[in-house]
Length: 211
Image 1 (spheres, rainbow, N blue to C red):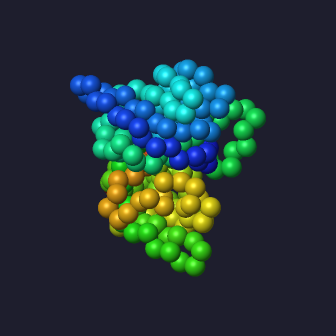
Image 2 (cartoon, helix red, strand yellow; image 1 turned 90 degrees about the vertical axis):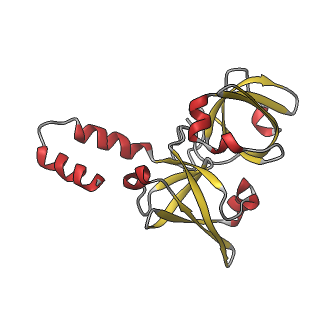
């Protein structure tokens, strides 16, 4: 589990694909402090397990499911990636609860600087539509952000200068693919309501909303 507060940006040293899976090596400094083999590190929002740790890097295996669902399938050597260690019971929860389970890939449509802030618009796949709401939380490449508005299968977020400068957002351009994870609470609420056979009227309303 993560918070969506990026600790540092790392740099992809290598990515080796073997069949349907891959191994990635990432240069970094902060996230390997007090990190042991088997610990979780989010890479652009994807929860990966450290299988090798050096003085200035770590390596992780990437499954075929992760490659199919995330932008890690197309990441290049030299690319900058957002990194965050898994939270602990003593960690401040400054963002929101992020699982590191990517639900789909979005496309970054626009980055517009407005004063000191940056307005970013992202289009998303249709199956995520019911989980993305105005003022709700969303993770973009592992960054905890708040949805400003939602229009025609795209949403916008306002990014403060600190977040922009200390994440890989400053390297992004229009048309880039980004990893998306919606707020897990919405999925739990949906599951509980749909599994309750006592309230058929409410179930019908939710199913109609899905359409």
